Structure formats: structure tokens, C-alpha cells
Amino acid sequence: MVIGFIGLGAMGRPMAANLAAAAPTRVWNRTVAVAHAHAEAHGTEAVEDLADLGVCDVIATCLPTTTEVAAVAETLAPLLSPGTTWIDHTSGDPAASRDLAARLAERGVDYLDAPISGGTDGAEAGTLTVMLGGEPAVVDRVSWYLDVVGRTIVLLGPIGAGHATKVVTNAMLATTLLAAAEGLVALERLGVSTSVALEVVNGSAGRSYVTERLFPERIVTREFPNTFAMPLLAKDVRLAGEVLAEADVEGPVLALVQQLTDAAADQLGPDADHSALVQLVERAAGVELT
Ligand code: NDP
Image 1 (tube, protein in one colour):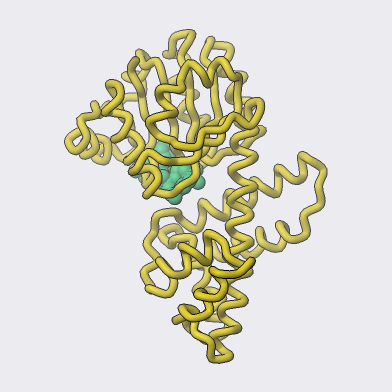
Image 2 (cartoon, protein in one colour; image 1 turned 180 degrees about the vertical axis):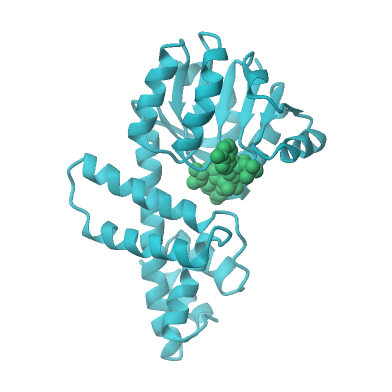
């Protein structure tokens, strides 16, 4: 089994490194130097031409959006053999991915949407949550691969179900982040420091990943390390809006969160971590969380 891994960003880099210990792994990255550095550090094989992935049994993609995945597939799909499995870890667009899967199926290539959760730490540790959409038999065929990257691996339904679940989850993250920021900024202005407030919040029903991890680790420390970029979160919130529309569900909360995350992505720029969203709430109130 040969793996071809496409997209060595914050998530793809550690995932491909772990996979290389399980099977021969070829890596392709838009910025070629990143692929060569990966090969040197992790024993993968860097390829500069997508055509060199044509022999792979498994193609994995971890790219920003489905647009980039489809562009890569345009070049690569005609070169793949029937029976190849395409595992897409991108937090992608369910509808566009169904179209892509149909085009791949014409070549006899099986597509699974397999977006991930767990951050760069989870990618390094191989403990990601993998949200699958596709056929059970295809999932079974690549279970050896999924076991390398993930710990919680759930088949949610047909193609697109994994992406839909992922973007809805991230819309919940954005909503919680904004709500917690507003509340904690208010408390700070009233003289309650965030570090102290969090001791109570995290022992109460208002606690969440945001209050247990993001605020103490990234925000109160003023580190805001960019491991998950703000524009990627805004993209997921937009896609979640499309999921609600497809399901014919009204989403007034999500619509507002989408406005706020789109504006934040514009204001903060491409290199800001999603946690920097809180800085905008701080600035508007003229306080810094401590
Ligand atoms: P990064 O921005 O760190 O990496 C993006 C990767 O895509 C890079 O390899 C980049 O190549 C490549 N790329 C960008 N544009 C193109 C293009 N036009 N054609 C080909 N390759 C391109 O992203 P992440 O690794 O953070 O995220 C990848 C996916 O995983 C996203 O969908 C994201 O939403 C999702 N995700 C991210 C998490 C995180 O914590 N970071 C957690 C869970 C999911 P280059 O090196 O040339 O820029």
C-alpha cells in the first residue's frame, strides 16, 4: 500500500509523518520546499509532480477548502487506478464534495470525506477525531490508515455527512468563543480577572473547550499561536450556514456568528489564529483579559 499525501500544512505535516511509519508515503505540497523538508525530517518521499502520485493506493488531501481539492483532482484523477481510495481530510463543502466523489467514481476511485478534529496536538499524537462520510466497505478497506491518524473514528452517513458534521461542530466553536469573549470581557471591566473567573466557569455548566483550553492557554497568556487560522474558522461557519439551508433549518444565531467571523477574518488577516477573534471584543471594550 502506497499513500500519496497532498497538503503539508499545520495538520497535514504531522499526519503524513505518522503515516510514513505505517506505509510508504509520498508527499506533495504546493510550496515544494515544504515537501522536501518533510521527506528529510520524516522519511517520506517528496514528489514535485502530482502525476507521481498516480501509482498510490490511497490519496489523502488536507487542503484549505474543497476548491483546492477539486483543482488537484482535476489533474490527478485521470492518472489513478480503479480501486484507489481518496480520503479527504479538508473541512470541506458537502455538496461540492458529492460532485467531486461522482467524478472520481467515474474513474473507479472511491471518495471518503474524512475531516478531522483535535488540532495540531491531536494530529501529532495520532489521536484525531475523524468524521467520515461514505460507504462502510470503503471505510473498512482503509481502517489501517484511519487507525494511524485517529482515535475516535465515526462513520456518520453517506458522502458529505462527515463534512456537514465537521462544519456544524466548528460553528459551535465559533459561537462559544464569541459568547465567552463577551461575557469575560464584561467581567474584566467589572474587576473580575479572567483567570479567576475561569476557575468558576470551568467548574460550572458554562464550561467548554473554549473556556477550558483556549482562554487559559492562548488568550490569557497573550500567545495566540496560529495553529488554526481565523479565515479557516470563518469558512467553516459559512459552510455550516449552507448545511442549515440545505436542511431547511432557520439559524438566526449562526447568521450573526457568520457576520462576526467573516468581519473578524477580514480585520485580523490570514495569519491570525482563530483565538485572536477575542482581541476584537477586547478592543471594542477597551480592556485586555488577564
Ligand atoms: P494550513 O493553512 O496550515 O495549510 C494549508 C495547506 O494547503 C498547505 O499545505 C498549503 O500549501 C496548501 N494549499 C493552500 N492553497 C493551495 C492551493 N491553491 N493549491 C494547493 N495547495 C494549497 O491549513 P491547516 O493544515 O490548518 O488546515 C487544513 C484543513 O484542515 C482545513 O480545511 C482546516 O479547516 C482543517 N482543520 C484545521 C485544523 C487546525 O487546527 N489547523 C483542525 C481541524 C481541521 P503551501 O504550503 O504551499 O501554503
